[in-house]
Length: 346
Length: 249
Image (cartoon, rainbow over all chains, first blue to last red; front, side):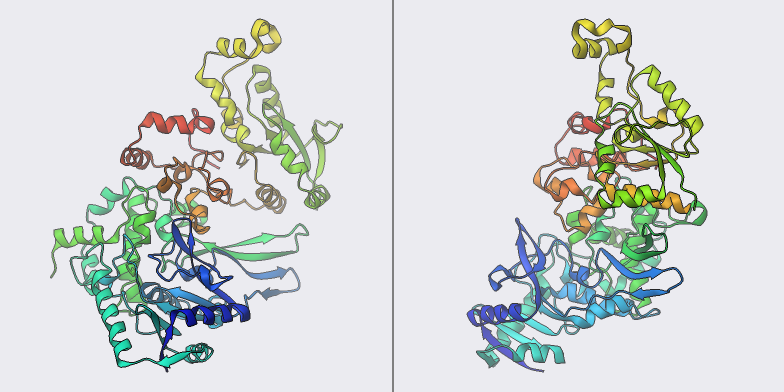
């Protein structure tokens, strides 16, 4: 595993070279915001972005995808997306989220559709340069990332330090020209940036250690905060839809006009939505807004971390839900801090 | 399978939703292969009193239309309301803000008192008869229409979204239009349109009607925080929102 330094102009030429060979998805400006898009030129790439509108999960779990096509009497065929691609400019907190999705989609049922895309991807993470308004990754321990990426990129001023984290990363870096082995000075510069990020990506400060949250929530099921906040909840699922770790989906069949063949599709779903828990016979076991509001915050910092035995919470502190919530109730830190205030840390 | 007999009727509307059916292009052939269209004023001359499925376009604005609709209901096994005018009353409900005599005078001038111009406050189809299925929107979405028809032919209940437009808008990666000063109705309006308007940078007007359980407290809280008044919000909702309750699909 190599660590090299590449001058910014050389990096631009390097990216342009890769764009010619394969599909490269990178962070681009979208109006006055940013989002992942397919790159046509390295000039579009904006590694100084604060946060993307959507997390990168859509490249592994698209908003809508066809899982299989079927024909009555003739079985079914699974449908796979089989193009290799580079995902360029993923922030560490989003990489932590993808690492969790990897566990979730291989535990219990191995999800071939998700994993096919995952194997086809080369993920280039970049350390944060401009913290977003609502980021609290430092509170969640996700401001930097140690594993999961193929390449880790850090802007040290006039150059990038590129570290490989996998074999795919090795061959990615091998394509770059004009690279030099990173000097001690470069590595120190990178260390300084990462150490600073671990503190400064913290525009909402959690009043306890993130690892304490599962214990805190154990005591909070009947706390009044759920009802209070949910009073103004639209149940619009925006918090779910912009979340890098929300992965719930719904599956539906759509039959063709011949009434013999058709396709099975899955689409993103969200636990905040009315009807998410509706089952046969119109029974709905989380009918109240407050129940659904509470469920998301339990998923993030109790149920999912326990399910995948993770010390890191499933809320990675990207802050997207904070900005996406129109009634401004989604901020996880505000809710958890309220619980810390009322229930204390024991 | 036996092809069900389908009749399409129009009431007060622009006929744009029927036009969406005509515009199905090659899918129109699939449609008429699978159903027997027995009456459809916009597309054929034949008429019939025997049909299994009645598709109603338009809102009900005259006493005689109310009777006509009731007769159609007694003849049809299944009744579908097609498009915003039929499902929620549509923009025709703007009329309900005024006195009927003023409305008639405004539209017909000196002839306002002629007996055949009698009018009444606009009603959606389900304010008069039982509606089995609603195909929302102004105009309807063609894909949703054919999906609903296929579901009916299979005897399966179609899944019409009960969540708001925000779901489709966020899935598309759009920034929230509220952040850019637009009073978008997305959070309380039924999805299924693919967030077409907000994706083009234009706020949701609410043509698909309210979700089953819109949060009024949430709406009040948001308009307050954005420095708006309830009246300002109502003014934005006037096009599709007059006297409209939740639209249970």
